[in-house]
Image (cartoon, rainbow, N blue to C red; front, side, top):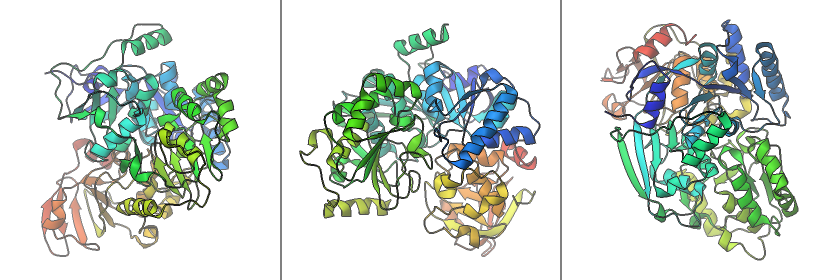
Length: 606
């Protein structure tokens, strides 16, 4: 029986000749990265546990979430990392570099068939070049730095084929937004996706990066795009050696297969608060905007900037609108300057800033304020992620066209006269509002008993759990007070929760960023266990590694034990038994795996 792409890469980096879905293996990591956010906690884990660095030539820092060093806490954290790097001779891609995952691909630290991990939750972007990349939490990265390898559960694979011819107006961003429209945030949760098709083979390097970068928003472990021969030759020139070609076997086993017609894809936007809440742009047209943002790891490449410059050349950003443009790396920034793109942006009235993550990081260029409407090329628009306003996600072409118009529009429908600041179409506003509305104290026993917080919501992301404005906090005892303070209706959770309370929630809990704090805040409050129908992949790892009990249950169990908010339940971690103490009804859920139980009993991965 043959293997898929991810199975081949993982097998090659393990002690096994073949691997299969569900198997837990140790995987050797080729590139091991911590960013300026998360990096200080990695350092703390290394030093607190008296660990050594396994191989400094494969260990790196990337300072990309705060490239200006303008925030005092970030500046402190960056200096902590710099001092540690000097002590251990670790390479830093500093604030003048740009997005770390892009640099890894551009200079050959990530290449077809390689493995890479980072505290960046979008490290799976490296599937764009056939590399296995994963975002991981601080403890995972520290363990990799110390051991050179880390445990990983082999995911099942999905084969996704795009048939037909790609329409001329459909960008790479539109392709991935159409995929989100089809699959949402849960259908492909936990899968490795392989993307195929005649038009897929034609995708440029930059377009592949755009599509692969949003695998996280689809809930997928990674989205692989088969490298072309030109991409292999690029890496052979960069690495000065032969790069092994990697393909799925003809008899590889896929748990699911899908075929879609790319000729039916539409220009799309994601409505505020939901990356997966994509709609035909026709439904969002004429929505007045206050700002536009072009950048992020999804759309900050040179091709993206060229597209924007072509549309902006000789035109002006609409009155009352601010357009912010941030190249993904300094190399791309320099290239944009040499090609005259920066001059076009400035003459159009745009703000151009240092290369980096920008809008996805608190305090950086691309944030918006309460009531502000932004159209952005980013990959996330969770509430509060890019500021306190509303954020629509779209392609660079749509963002540039909208910035000129003063409202959301397409390139072929830019008005001669832009909208004034007070412009508003009531029926469009009502439609948007409709979409938005649709929009360490546990005991060391193998069980827990406590009061239930029944939070019946899916896709509760890490910004809702622990907002990015608190990421500079490294003391676990200080984290609890901020738990759920960005989850609507639960802002006062930290004040009302009691030790041993139990959270019962929906699907894809903990989706989003790789922040360990989204786990540790519950430990600080004494929450005894979290039950969810499914978890974000990184969140699941972070919780297990931190010995925070999390378990998976089937939704029907709530009916079987007649669960209500405030009930007291008993949960057996090892055997998967759940009993509602309020009525004596019992049911069965998925127990801890052997690995999870072992880590839990040891008090954590260290």
